[in-house]
Length: 85
Image 1 (cartoon, rainbow, N blue to C red):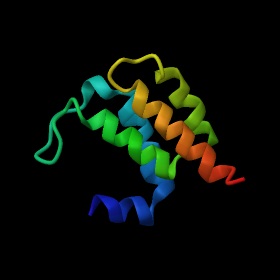
Image 2: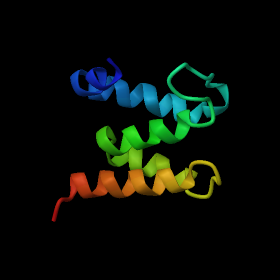
Image 3: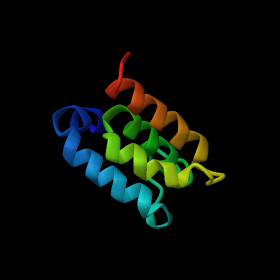
Image 4: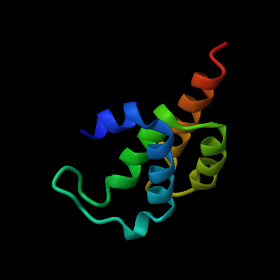
C-alpha cells in the first residue's frame, strides 16, 4: 500500500516524508521497520520522489552519523533524475 501511495500521490507523500525526516526523533517503530531504520528508509524514498528543494534540505543531514550516507545517496538520485545528462 505504501508504495502505491508513493506512486499515486508523490507530492503529498514527499511533503509527509520530509516532515517525518525533519521530526525523526518523534517517529515510532512499526511492525514493518524498527524506529532507528525509519529515517534511513524514508530518505531512500525521497531519492525517488524528491525535488531540487528536497535535495537542498537533505544536504543539512550529510553530517549526521545515522542518516548522512542515505542523504548523500538520495541527493545523488534526485540530481540524476532531474538532470539525466
